Length: 87
Image (cartoon, rainbow, N blue to C red; front, side):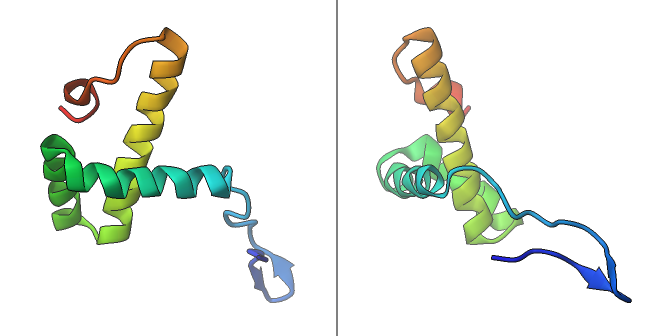
């Protein structure tokens, strides 16, 4: 997908052509959808975020929190604590 911006024949910016691994992002969005259905703290965070923005942004925010939690789980070799991630 081309994200170049042209105005008066001049290049005005590159946009957001590369934004991480699309397959990993998809996997975390799927995990976020399941987490919203199964976990009350995640559901509360999602509802608060959705009230301020739209649903896609809220899902991506939950996915981002899960991705950060996964990083800390792998780095520190600890169990997932939903209260730490969604307090």
